[in-house]
Image (tube, rainbow, N blue to C red; front, side, top):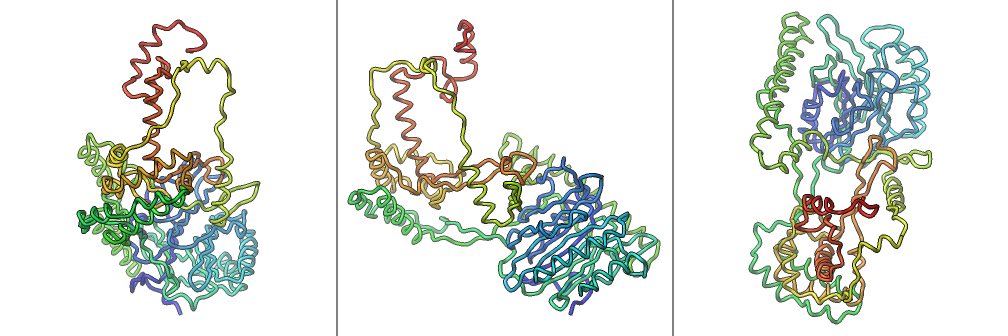
Amino acid sequence: MYIDEPLSPPPTKRDLTICHLNAQSIMNKHDEISNYLSNQTSPTILGISETWLNKNTPDSLINIEGYTTYRLDRQKSRGGGLVVYVPNTLKATLREDLDNHQMETIWIELNLNRQTILLCNLYRPPNSGIAFFDHLDSMIESSLNCRKEVILMGDFNCNVMTSNSLSSNLLSVTDGHQLTQIISGPTRITNHSKTIIDLCFTSSPNSLSYSGTTPLTSSDHLMIHTRWANCVDTPNNVTRMIRSFKRTDMEELSEDLRQAPWSVMSCFDDINDMWDHWKGQFINILDKHAPLTKVRTKKYQLKWITKETHSLMRARNYFLNRHRKSNTTADWNQYVKYRNRVKINLKINKKNHFEGLCKDLRGKPRQVWTELNRALGRKTKSRITHINKDGKSVILPMLIAESLNKHFSTLQTKAPASTNSQLNYLNPSKTQFHFKRIDEDEVCACLTKLNTRKATGGDGITAGMLQKCARDISPGLTTLFNHSLTTGKLPAEWKRANVTPIQKAPNDHQLNNYRPISVLPIIVKVMEQIIHKQLYTYMVSSNQISHYQSGFRPAHSTQERKSKTGRLPLTKANM
């Protein structure tokens, strides 16, 4: 059975903690919420009601790194609104089919290792009529028909601490569906009152090990929480595989690469067989000297929340808990005092942090924007929860990926109609272009100059690997590149890209609001650079490029372009 108490003892890594908080505006409490979730060692789901967001607030301002954000804003009036944060390590699906559009609800299906849970985050406005309970009854019945465990959490604005008509109607509905309310302590505390209006109903109370309330932010609502024990297989930490060269003997690695049988590639006629042989040899040698290791991705910590801030938060929560027991004005006044000090401390620290950041990183715009984008949530990765396609909502991750892939494959740039006047930009040439044989020094030079910050393609070979081994792998890659130019074919893997959908417009549920970013293997980009150099050299030497062409050409500035066009007569060709 559940035990009603704060978050103690702490949850294990296999426990799932589910929380709800009436924030009364999420924007001015986002830092504390983000700090709380970032410090959780076990998977924690947090539902927020009364977010007070609208369509003008972008997701980037409320996103939290490592979490997927599910959001519902009130459309016709101010206030209300819901947000649910779900760890990216959990398998979660939005269940719009269970939503009742007469109510503010977000339904999420959680697929855990032993069971499936239907979680509902709900907000009932205080001025809701009696019809709310009819809609609630119908919604609960639909969810129970799915034959899954159900958890219903939210601010119902029905005080079950006392007997009244609202609480009687609510409990009549939930008791009729055999749902158990597991929160027994006050959830909203003021100087003069205590009420239990933030509630948690469940169809399986015996599966829950702990439940209770705890202060989290300056909201006068306490956060309610419950814990589902030993139900999570995946860890709460995000890991990734890397190759570390810190302990690698580079001389031994270099010797093994030089002794590798790269010449065997000449025995193959198919370019794909040649690539498979080269890649296999390279990866096997790397596995021997710098094997793949799993590392934990560090969670982003808000640097303006200092030890002093944590101390003030603990003092604030201490006096609130004291007031819950003593109900004295003195304890309440101390709570208000420290609540205000926390707000002031956060504002000052945040201001000082970014002022110092801009001062310390002056002349380093990349580092400045990295910190700013991360703090503002612009680089926070969040799963696409659902997509609208052909008038229907697609919620399954695989179907979402297929829908985006099909949509991107139909995108094309509309080319202008071909006219003879366009050929005037090309000067006639007496020579014909032919690819020259690529030499090892050219390949080595390109590999050495690679930008190691560039994203890795589907082959898993990073720019750092190629740069460190440039001299020793140049002979094999040179053979591969020359064979590709001779046959006019590329390995199939070089033409496969990792495609990431990037949202370009506010509505994240429309296919047309996404644009694809494709990442090809870095090796094919090396070959592309060499081919571009040959082709550009030919175009310049044969005077193929117009004298007035300045774009995408080195040593051709906008000022030079302006000086050239200033001497031209104004015609349709240069308008």
